[in-house]
Length: 343
Image (cartoon, rainbow, N blue to C red; front, side):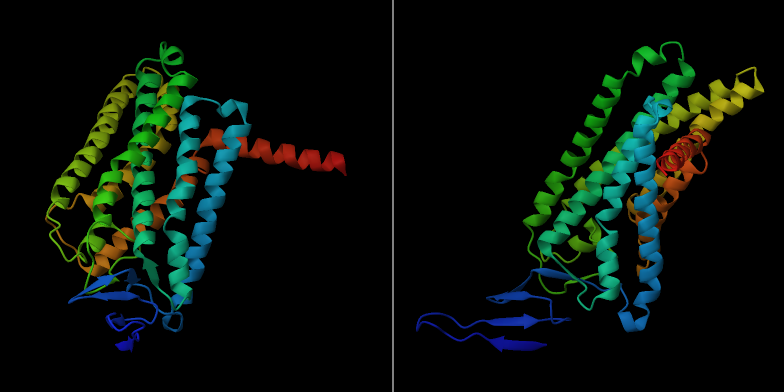
């Protein structure tokens, strides 16, 4: 620990010490006998000479694939008239959300892997938590809307065009955004008022509620109530989607035609896979109740939740979806044909 004495500029002014803990860029402000943390240190990232580059390159490629894949899905759905249906509208919304969802965390991870400065300011940490959880909740709400859409399409096909209108789809999407960006706001505002002192090491690969709250030097028992509310939100979405798919599967199994059953299953397969991937990782990450994991398993679960799940989503929606593959083929074929005509 290095200490630098700031000299007096007035006879009545007090001298105070600025201490640098753990890392030269970690700033701490001394006030009386309590030291207030203004920056956090991500302690889970290796230094560049310790193999940071070995993690940086694969993560950069994965991030590039996530951005490119989701952007391609979003653009194809907007340009191809055959995909202007409620189901693909919600898929385009999910792809748009995934781009920003991963951008809240992965660029900072990449920076920490190759930089000597593995810190984040308190304000930056709060912003990362807010947008990460807001976008995550919004995704959960959109997945719920997609389950309702599939339920109506398969269980009530004759009324589907009059129920799932473009206006209803926009309202459901707006409601998902409103829910996502408002629900987290009180918790972030509360955390912003907490004093942080002592250790400033975050034992996680991004800013999350539990690792950050463990560094607060005050009572944080209120978080139990907040966690219970979030758990109720997650379980409510899960139950709506699960019950919708139980009913959908019952209707599909009752179809007399094998071709009809296959077609109905294929339209739901992509959404069901994303649903299981998303809510499975959410459950392991946040519905652990009193269970505690080691730092290794906490980090492994975070990698699955933050990196692996978004990486698989474009694959599920494009490579495993015939309509999407056909639309991508039509788009590239038209582009190639237009380029040939110009030449």
